[in-house]
Image (cartoon, rainbow, N blue to C red; front, side):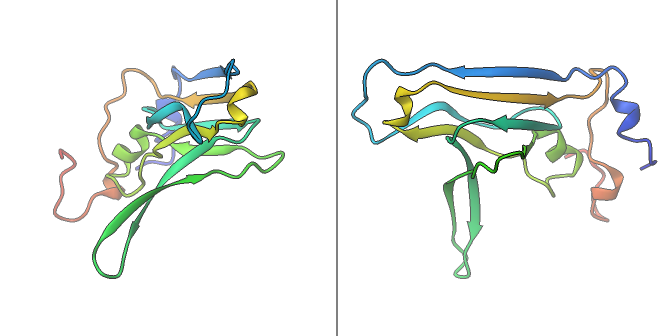
Length: 147
């Protein structure tokens, strides 16, 4: 790919900044752990998140030595002054699945759900007329990029 590959796909980008307010629950729920935003991936190139409170979890996949696989939700630590970057479905497609879209959700102990929560996300999206196919540099020798 040429050096300007990404630049040329961001001239009319459709990125969006979103402030998310998780309202406080009026009464405690009986579950010990509540999901406030269900598991999903973002469809764009990437998402830059300024999380203000704990609750974001990512799904981590592990391949074990015995050949089995497992998945587990892992809480993302909050580090003051930093941003969280999630890869989106577009980046997974561009890299021919070499980089994976970040499956994530918002979940928290039920006691924390009584407090309001805020997060701010910048969804990086490309030009709407861009043809989306794997980058040539991410194709194996026997692949043509057509799935």
